[in-house]
Image (cartoon, rainbow, N blue to C red):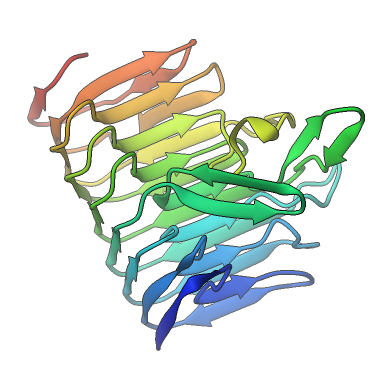
Length: 276
């Protein structure tokens, strides 16, 4: 299946957008080219009222110019005792290129800009107090599992390769990232909402995680002031799976702040060019 979106002067034109009740999508291969503001190849909405899932049995290929690659957004629905899960699984190769920076997001009376991600799981709804509360809390969680090789090309400044955000978790097999823009981040776990930033004051109930697996993880951040690995806040953890990882090859800094954790078991070689 191939989808092309060319609406460069318009906003919110995802190639696939899933929302509301029982949204499920199962396909073999998927290819998307998306050129529209704040628009993604795959977006599971925070408005889902049940569990939601996307399963790609084969390969995923996407090139996105003004938005994100794939997003599993945590649902606003549910409660403290009921968690809806929005999940994306790709069983073949995932190959995503993003080329934009400073993406504009217009929601209700807010217009903000944010730094896009090739892969994101976590909150996307605003919730803040200014002469009363606005928006809604996110009770669900977003999960992305990429079972084959993952190849990410980041061409803009301040791009994220992989971001496990507030109430989000990303699990990867072999990972290959090349970024040419400045101040980019290869793999991040952070207590943040990608699209709404500080306008989301909801609770991080489910943590912010990235799990690395596979025989090879290559993260080359070639721009200035870029980070290969970044864990920020007590909720944030980057770790290896039960079997560890085979090898890791990093260009870019490795940084953990505010009790964030980076805990990797490496079976073979480790190469790091950057500050730790």
